[in-house]
Amino acid sequence: MTFLTTLFLQAHATPATADSLVTAAQQEAATTIEKISLLHLLSEGGVLMIPLLLCSLILVYVFVERLLFIRKASVIDRSFMKRIREQIESRNKEKAIAICKELNNPVGRIIEKGVTRMDKPIEIIEKSMENEGSLEVYQLEKNLSIISSISGIAPILGFLGTIAGMIILFFNVQHQGFSLETIAGGIYTKMVTSATGLIIGLLAYMGNAYLIAQINKNVNRMEAASVEFLDIIQDTHH
Image (cartoon, rainbow, N blue to C red):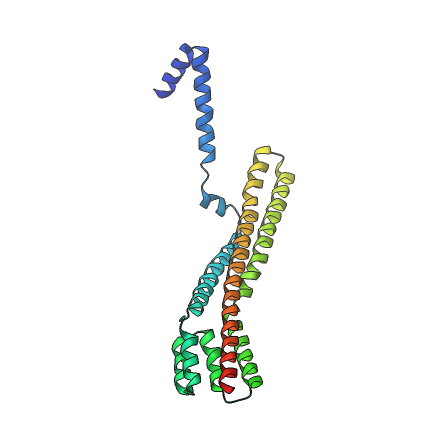
């Protein structure tokens, strides 16, 4: 009945009404075309979408783990160095070490290393704290190489998936004949791997840059605390 009714309306419609019907039909068709499922596109990406998915999962895990670790290392009591100065001036090494252990972060461990050697020459104290600082920086930068690697690997995997898809597409054209619709459909689905790889690579690059910036802030705090501690030691020695 709907089909007969449509024919009847078209037969009795004015030219303006007919144009309106055609326009509405085109708009409906365009709306139907635009409704592309994201999951469908990802599934059309091919086998190389699997390593890209693994890259994205590893990226999220490592980024969150490093972010939480670095934020925990950033927590510091503003009165920490003041309390350390008080204990150093009163020559209470055990209490100063206890305050450092209570802080339990890179700054605390570096100052603790200095406190344990506070009776040594200033050069030995400085060298010991520098070595401890290098170890703490290594702990902060741990696994950042994974994120950096993903930022380079993901786009390459994406391009590889697109190239593999294009090879298969042209192979099918050679053996099955030319079809513009088939070629267009094949190209847009195979470009999904490139887009996915670039997105993952961009997120990895941004995440790595953000974490490095946070690490640099921690390094600056460690250096500032070390300089202040050495000043305290020199003041007490005089």
